[in-house]
Length: 385
Image (cartoon, rainbow, N blue to C red; front, side, top):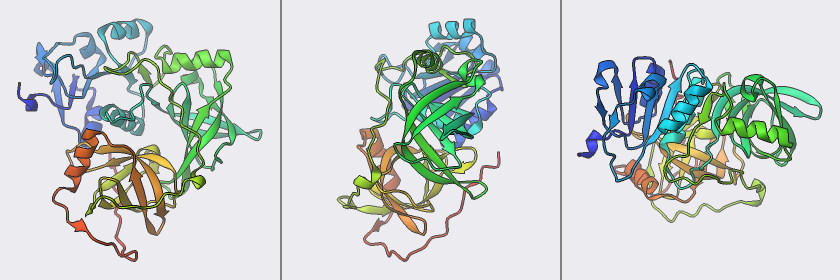
């Protein structure tokens, strides 16, 4: 079967998943959408992701053979009503993730980006995009924060106030996520990155390692991240193809100030003036986008980000054409920020990531040297939806 018959994403619905379709288009995904009578009795097997409404999952047509023997795409069910018999039925069918339509737009975008990313550092336990309010308790004070992501070992929050590395904190999950009661979780801040809100204020994205959790709280947390708690915005129902059942999701504790890395250019740089997005800072009130300046197979320089601590680790989405999926890579801050470009060095690249970056550089002029005084005008991309 010709490869073009296998889209990256297959979307099956009866018109109710328009917002999901728009998100996939904004990501540049190769998506084929079938609705109503167009679904038929047979559908092509997508290369990466199958997304369907609850009714379409229950009435799933025959999926043609995949692009490789034994291949199974990640299967996501998007639903509006949550009850245990539905979850059990979807598990039996082989659905990997259950996503509620109440999930906010930016968390949905982050979730889809994670599903489309298949690099070497993808964790078997995905940090679930949650997008709900939580509370940060420290020094006896309780302040509202946004719970961006959650796993059994860690979480990520967006806050108005900075949290110091290695600072002990308590995160309190709201009742809607905690199963009817608030769920306090103790942990230690292990990494913080800065960004700016739509109003121009500074916000902080902090990864927290969850530690010293009492048995009752641990059991409730496992129910949430294991897909057994009703009402959660995103629930895993089964492990994806080729992934182990268990993995340590905690980030290593490493002080950024102890890891000042040199900028050694072993690879030629090429001009690259496309959108670059920091995944950890992408959020409904945070602008994580800036403009690339130059790109190589080992790193990238980006204009428009605030000051960043050298040694900070994060995830970048590098965009090409409007309908092309971004290349998602792990990266480390080398230097810069504010009025100067931020220099990033990539982590280990898979073959597909290597090919993706090479494609982004193809046809772009090589950069022999860059004047530190050069300036570019950065245009912020505003989503009008």
